[in-house]
Structure formats: structure tokens, C-alpha cells
Amino acid sequence: MQVRNLWLLAALALVSCGGSPEPAADAAGDTADSAAAPSATSEPELLSDAADGPTTGRFEMGVHYLRLSPTQPTSSNPDQVEVAEVFWYGCPHCFNFDPYLKRWQDSKPSYVSFVRVPAVWNPLLQLHARAFYTAEELGNGAEMHDAFFAEIHERQNSLESEAKLQEFFGRFGVDAATFKRTFDSFAVQAKVQHADELNRRYRIESVPTIVVNGKYTTGGGAVANYDELIELVNELVAAEHAGR
Image 1 (cartoon, rainbow, N blue to C red):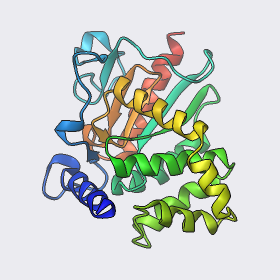
Image 2 (cartoon, rainbow, N blue to C red):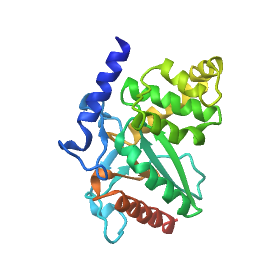
Image 3 (spheres, rainbow, N blue to C red):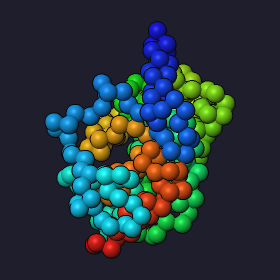
Image 4 (cartoon, helix red, strand yellow):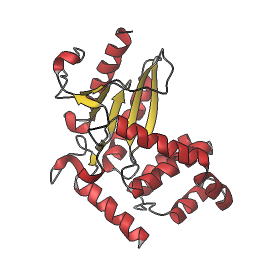
């Protein structure tokens, strides 16, 4: 019954991708259902007044990106501009966007710090978040990142249970006992809880979402394609760096 419920939740998330029957893969995202969306009463506001945003030339606040108020803390050094991607391994749009992010990482300025934050708005996403942080704790995060996406989207294995995740980790030399100990560890649980806090602070309602320096949020649905999204991120990063 638990696995069936997880599949149902995943299906509901995919139905709402992009808000249209046939979303373009380059300009959409997976969305949380309204019941799971962050509460506006206790969380930061999202501002859309262009007067409160940097002048980036081709991109407009309230159209292509929004501002978080107040600005949220980051985990990066104060002299760095942090770019965070909120993602889910089961999201086809995150899968499609990932190669763009990799190319950007290879060319980003040295003052930019890039971090990933898993979305956690339902039990399946929370399971995958635990898997993400388990790989990180075991020192396999970079090695397994591509493999998570490939397993789900190319091999059609949704990794929707702890047993399937255990088998998957076994392919990377992680024995069952080590996987279980790490997957259930306080360190992993604490990271998932922190991700949940960040999801709420960033007011995440869809993935992929990009958060620049805890201040600006944007995503594939705000622009024409992922090349344009990278250009927007670069302009917001440059504006933040220039304002220091």
C-alpha cells in the first residue's frame, strides 16, 4: 500500500508539470500540489515590483524572476554569491536542465558557489532527498548524481522504495548495512529537515527552481528555454557581485 501511495503522489506531481497539457521540456517544471505549498502567513514574501530588483537589461523582475523578502541566509562564504538549485531526481525537467547546469558550472565565475537542495513536498520526494544526502554522506554524491537521473529517466526505475534504493547503492559498492545505517542516520535526517526549511524559506512550489544569493528566485517556466534561464542567472549573479 505504501509503494502504491508513493506512485500516486508521483503521478499527481507529473500531471501538474508546467501548468499546461503539453509543456515544453525546456520551459517547465514539476509543481507541488496546493495542499503542500508553503504558507504565506509565516514565510518570506515574494516581491514582483521591478523597482526592488536589479536592472539586468533583458530580464524584468515580476516577469522573469521574483525577489524574496527578507533575503534568506546562505550556506556559502560571505564573499561568494550563492546559486542554489532546488530539484527532484524524478522530475523530467530537472533531468533535462542538468546538462545546462553542468556546462554553466564549468564556466561560472570563481566567486560563485553552487549548491543543490532537494525538494521535499511529498513522501516520494523526501525519500529521494534522503538518498541524495546518503550519497553525499558516503562521499558518493558527485559519482551518483548522474546515475540517479539515468536510473529513473532512462532505465524507468523510479527508485520509489528503500529496498530499491539499497539495491541501487549496492552497485556503487555500498553494502546493505552501511546503506541502512547512513540512510537512517541523524546526519541525513538533519539535512532533510534543513532542506525542508529552505524549501519553505524559498517558497518552493515547482522544480527546478534557482535561488540566487537567497534573494532572487526563478525557474524554467519564467523564460523561453534553459539557455535563457542560464543567461538570467548570470545577470543576477553579476548584479549581486557588483553590489558588494
